[in-house]
Length: 306
Image (cartoon, rainbow, N blue to C red):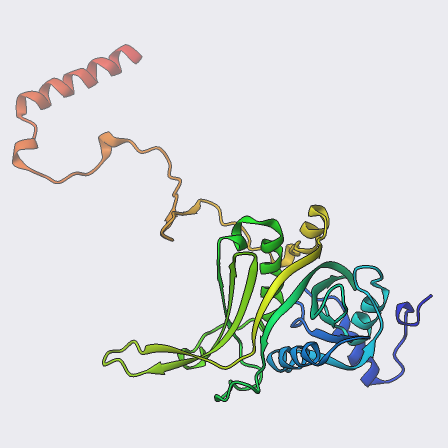
């Protein structure tokens, strides 16, 4: 049995807190990413991993030593590092003659590889090469996806889901306008994926809504889709299953239309409309002759019953 798979009873309070953090929860912790350098990674791939780590801080772990492994052939080392560092996302960089400047992005489910996609780097501009002011560490980015491939092709659709998982950051209850200052833009065009990052500048516009300008801050990547290892539909649905405690309870007799308007249905007892009090008007008052005939009809009915 692997050392990490054994049931360990904590001997100190610190170890107990550590194990409690890793226990399954209804609302899971923020997903951490590990960035691993392959055994033959060149300077470009190493710099890409460093720049992505700068974007992911403080929710990332960068392994500086080289690790001789091949994710598409043997995934045991990735699963070991995932369990050791408690990371559910990973990026692996390598370089060889057959697949130069190679990046593998993937995610885990229950410390096993769920899906991973291999990308080739064709062009790269580092954070250091663009001399602009950068966003603070830990800034939550806005993600923009452009291109029909992200909605049509299955491989690109999974890549979009994977990139959202990788870069979305923590879930926040409220949004402040001044906090919207970082944009990650992904474009799928002619079989390539263009990755750009911008700083959002709010300028004076003479009205309440500010004028927006985008300033490129790096890194900048031109990527090509290579190999894919996608999970089966059943496993993918299982990984996205929501606990019953988090599912919103359905409210009876309440419905919503496409515009978000709420409609409620009220159940009432059957009403006798003859006893309904209406507006009193002189024209609707009964004449004396009509009253006499009604009284006679009521008397005749009583006599028949008796």
